Image 1: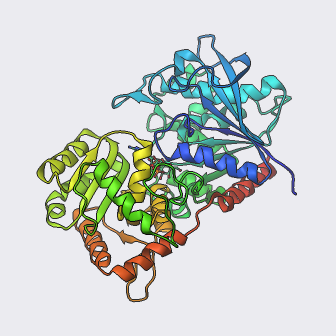
Image 2 (image 1 turned 180 degrees about the horizontal axis):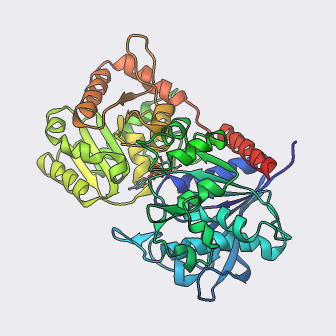
Image 3 (image 1 turned 90 degrees about the vertical axis):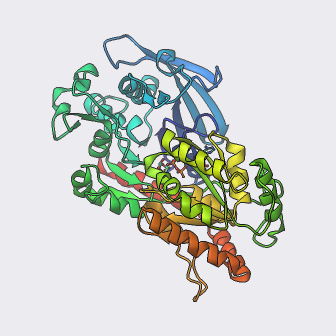
Length: 484
Ligand code: ADP
Ligand code: GLC
């Protein structure tokens, strides 16, 4: 085997400990896939209030300079599998809180310090132990300062001397945008506050730091890698992303089929497979009961599991309430987010309580039941860096209806009845007309039972396992290592 790598993986979310979105799934599954390829991975996550104390074996604490206050990080290690360690970074003033990023709809006011601290604590873990990983792998704005710290303070450190970083963009829309005084507050060299470095619209952007100071740059689908280099989707970063396009790779996320497979899923009413789909009907009945809807086997059920935020486009769905009421479908919604979208769904459920049902909660077991019990799965995203739930749906024989954007383009092939091809339904315009058009196509196809079964089975046969993507990441790590 080629050289065995030690990858230091810094993330703000991690299944099964803390999750708000797909980053948590990826942070569990990708390291696991990397260890299966023979590499060693140390995953770092803050020890938030939601993670029981002590989360692992205490292995020491270190002073971590971040602002004018003397602060230290405690490190707790768990070893869930061979080659894999999870290091929980403890600093109660920052992380002993009920939520990850904020309370209600407000971000915590000290997020710039919390995640600067976390990023630097990851680096200090290695420096203090005299240990050098081959590469750091940072994710999204929360750990985007990691390569900035490496360049600013550790580039000629005896231990961490010229240690490279691969930075993965899971969502360019969240940028870690903070006031201009942040550079001074963190004690970073003044020139990091300039236009050529972290400066962004009069403040500083941690995301920009990750993009500029990492040797390797990836995002979570090939299509999104192209999109973020355009003015429409680049949030002003399109120029720097284009200037680094040779180092920017779109690597599609995978699915952890140990967690998401109807053959083995412990959360669903009956297991099933493409060879024997009979259990799916039972899962549908179970889902309808869970949402207190009447059980009518032939009426198609549209499932939704999502953060209900602008990105995901559900305002368009609730805006199309009249068209939805007129169609022969049921809809089950699981999600949390914007009050307007929740209100819209609530009104739909009040108008037709026998056909629309909502649960404004975060409920992992119910998410599995929806994947298994629904016939269609709706993702009208305005943008979608990758999206995991459409890939889960495919495996569960639940046909995705998605907007043509980002990873949804790379994972859902449009249905073509004449040629008997494709795995789902796609629409281009993020408006009611596009959405209703695609739903009508899907509802018409649903009535052709035999062709529908073939469509379902084509989706179930798709393989998005992590191995291929993990190999692509190893390639990105090695290229980053070759650069320093
Ligand atoms: P994003 O990361 O943008 O939210 P993804 O599709 O990548 O979108 O990942 C979303 C993940 O979060 C999936 O694992 C999905 O099942 C889960 N999820 C989202 N909302 C809920 C919810 N209300 N209850 C349970 N799981 C949810
Ligand atoms: C982000 C994106 C989502 C992606 C996930 C994991 O939350 O919104 O599309 O699947 O990260 O990479």
